[in-house]
Length: 90
Image (cartoon, rainbow, N blue to C red; front, top):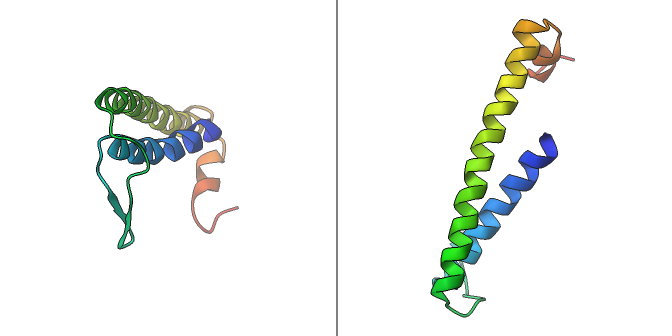
């Protein structure tokens, strides 16, 4: 589950940047303007946007499942999984 979350939230910003670049827009990163690195292409942009939105929805689902699993462990199985996630606990 964690690997899927990490991969999703790594891919989302990369797809967002690719979507902006394929639309011919430069973007700023900590005050530095990053030049457009793709040839503007509206078809490519719409394809990347569709994938970006689908992956975002998958990310929302993964977050919900992750929260549900944590609550399941805490309230149903009554183990210490949830308390081990809190700061200062081990």
